[in-house]
Image (cartoon, rainbow, N blue to C red):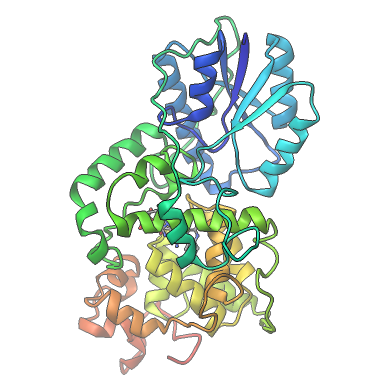
Length: 415
Ligand SMILES: Cc1cc2nc3c(=O)[nH]c(=O)nc-3n(C[C@H](O)[C@H](O)[C@H](O)COP(=O)(O)OP(=O)(O)OC[C@H]3O[C@@H](n4cnc5c(N)ncnc54)[C@H](O)[C@@H]3O)c2cc1C
């Protein structure tokens, strides 16, 4: 094969990248391409994405290649490059989002070979089928069992040489201000090895400790494919691998039910309240419930929130304020560096009882959660400075004080 375009999307790495590895093995010339599509704004994830592109370009250049960056519609720009270079094929990683699937269909109608490769998940989202029938697993535990025994593909080595022809315009990666964590495969691998060395062994005991902050924080890197989920799943710690299985689980749900971010997966008769003031107080971390406000402020400050805090804040919005899960999911999606449709909407629906939870009426009592997962109040003190001076458990119940704390609201709901 002569010239192949490797279209990068949310697989911004050179390690274990099946599409890149196949192109480098088969083609004389390889054109790694990323298209910045102004119609798909990256929002707060923008700077992180641009970090990832800079890092990927450096890795490809170190292998004799380059990352070509274009701006516009992905299919049109890819086809333009194909005709400029006489490329005969486009290789890309398969994705499950509606946007990605529409794009894949459009490539199908073009006069070029379009090949999809695995790499987004540990197990491809269309591989496992429940024994009792159906096109996907609706319940996690049987999925976890099947997933654990499913055959895994061979990992791919990073290609030693990427043969990109000279003389093409590489295109500009726009300059940008960082927001939250630094993006890119190099930062991801550094974080992965440091965290695995220090924290993986204590994951089962430590992952719910809000103040301890001992989860991997690798989710933004997984979101942009800076790390291979298959590589992470080889770590040998079952509790951690189970979390990666949750990620795959939501992808196979989204694959079977592409409207996951809009429609109830399991429709229920819930009357949501239209209360923009309450929703806004929740967004700003000003509900007057400290553990909820701490989580929401962590999200605003860092573009990331601890999983336990995500469950508490989401449950507070849908169960106590009775605001539609879509309102909460939209806010999370906008701010989270790891925000992606399958995991965000899948988890929101799980919390709202319209998703895959086998106990759809489950509710998280914020005070009980706070006492259990932030027993010393350290997480609240870190993110809600108005309460930093309160002693002991009072930090979780400022409404018990004889006078209100200056600048901090009374709770929106009875606690
Ligand atoms: C309301 C709500 C919204 C969420 N939105 C997102 C989202 O948009 N994107 C996202 O990646 N995760 C989302 N999650 C799942 C989870 O909170 C994050 O994946 C996790 O907090 C990321 O931190 P970590 O990398 O330190 O996780 P770790 O504890 O280190 O877990 C390792 C990896 O497993 C995966 N994982 C862990 N928990 C879950 C889970 N419940 N569902 C799916 N994958 C999981 C993540 O890829 C994570 O990086 C959401 C959870 C809730 C309750």
